[in-house]
Image (tube, rainbow, N blue to C red; front, side):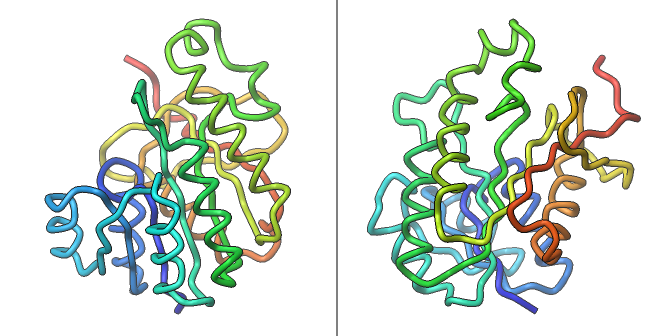
Length: 211
């Protein structure tokens, strides 16, 4: 069973990936900035390296430690941060993977990235359009890399128990909500699916409604 290296595991979606991967029996590595987040991840059996995704050397070191056969998940992102990691952090990761000889990457971005920008409502563009554009740059950098990649674009993320009803789609307008744990379950399945290489998916849960 491959080792999983996660970037963005300190909270939210990345933490959900760590929990699901550990529950499935994977050995999990993660790089996080916070010692508090490191303690929480250690408690579920994750091997943690302290470091910042904006530090290219730290990212390269984490990739080298994980080993060439590891699968990598990136949920890196930031919201209105003075130093957003959405593009630069993911670019360091993609470059670091190439240098270390790692191949398989699941990049989790968001609805509205790339060719789905046209479907992002105006209020969403005003609220977090800058971050979506940075994530789109990361997608482009990945698509022109030598990696074996899959891109996953979730709908609005929600905490809570997985419903098991999340739906993957391609090439169509997608909106709504999805539970973080459902994204993690589906995302890890995509990593293991050779037919998902070089593909872009959206994911939402038609059964969830905004309040």
